[in-house]
Length: 384
Image: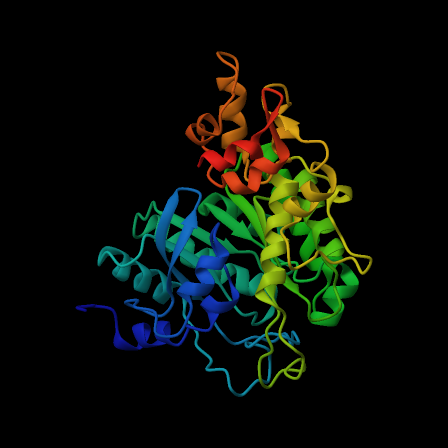
């Protein structure tokens, strides 16, 4: 590769590889886990294929600094950890480096985070300064996702939203108590949650277009799926968050949690499935098949578990069901439900093939819970 950027700038990017493992930036975080796997064929280790609001793009996932004054118990960048290589960029250096690799055609977007040095306000200034340089000096009009630091000021949040397509601030814990166990130097109600409220207010009052996301660390401090989804549900319905990320805890050496057992990626996946039901399917927390300990079953997805309990003896009639009822059927998502509602205005739906034409992909999952013009759809399966 023929870069004009100083070699040390690119070398520092290569040392940011660990950052990509702990900060999903797009709409398909499971795919980003795969992208972050060792030996991925990438031009630089901190470039990931990310699904953004404007499509899938190669994104540079960078940090202004991997140094940090906070001592979050699970984090590889925590203060005092000697096995972390500390890398720091100035805003000018970050903007110039990104502009160079962007013009080389290697990336189409930037996710910019940082460790905290000299407080959240000073760190946020550096993130904003880098984005300002990209937008103004380099006339960059592409995708930018900026991290909001704990304790950032109101005007800083506003400016970040003006510059970025997406902003994020990680709550990390579902409650103040869980956060205190994960990151004792962070304050849930003073440093973090109010910034999400500000973002919601700025989107509503000033029409700022930047979407907002957050992330939780799952399973390190006894948090339950009920707690995580209760907070997620509030964020979706009250503050308009685009999504909540779930990071299954994985122990890092030289941290206070290094001896804890890792949390299954399957638990993370079930949380995503349940959160989408809350966000996109009109479900309520009371609909979730929680065990008595407040966690979801791992051996079955939550929608299928609900259907087995509630629809097996009372299947849904495709030609009469409300859209919300169709969305209760495994395998039927919003697009397929809308297609069914539109199609039946013109004709009755009597065959599985018609449902497939309307977008139903996993026929075997859906048919036990459907009636086609009064007849069990499952009985037609023998014809396929």
